[in-house]
Length: 321
Image (cartoon, rainbow, N blue to C red; front, side, top):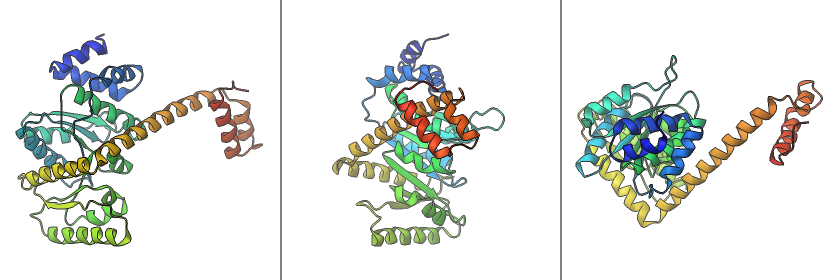
């Protein structure tokens, strides 16, 4: 079996297959993933821009990302895309449709990787930032994370992104749904895709009203997201989205928010990892059927009291009783 260190050297030298194998190890987690994280730590300056692209399914995210990658490569970048896909119900692996669409537009000029959600966001919260560091260590940037567009994963993308692009489409109620799910609160750039369809101007107007309401209620920050009309099938507007992303990053740098976002991302990742470690330890502890659990199972103690007692034992490293 090839050692991660050898794979990393080959990936840094430009071997895409070696990078793919490293990403698989990162996605699986465990000791190999931790070893890779240690190896890339000193090789990752944290300078590569990270762009999150999210929105409801069917809004054309993958096609637009393909055009964005083309724009990034055209301005001297070596972009990489992490497409967070729904898991296959048969294999648990990522469905590769998004990857095929992006490759078709980008002309093979980027490294595009699909990552499966596997039905939960816990492992994903750890694998995504680790994969992004690996990309940067191998010379890639800007880095794009495109989410599946379902549930909490949508909002979670902002934890790792410097700039979050939220996409909506006309006639789908996306503007209202994005507002309800909290996406408008985290959007740095708003995109109304399929702008050639009826209702696109109405969708833009709805978004403008929601942004205005946010300013009135005090929820809006010092940055008002630009609303850009695009047609991803033809690439129309992709250059404007790319420019808006660069403008937002310049704003973050000028206002010292970029470093603050990066530190908040690290803080959240540490919390996620601590939660994972404690969850694993708790599962192992409960599998021993400690007396406290038996009391709860027999109805002599409430689940809340039992959890508090067991947590205290775990944190103090007391053996099962």
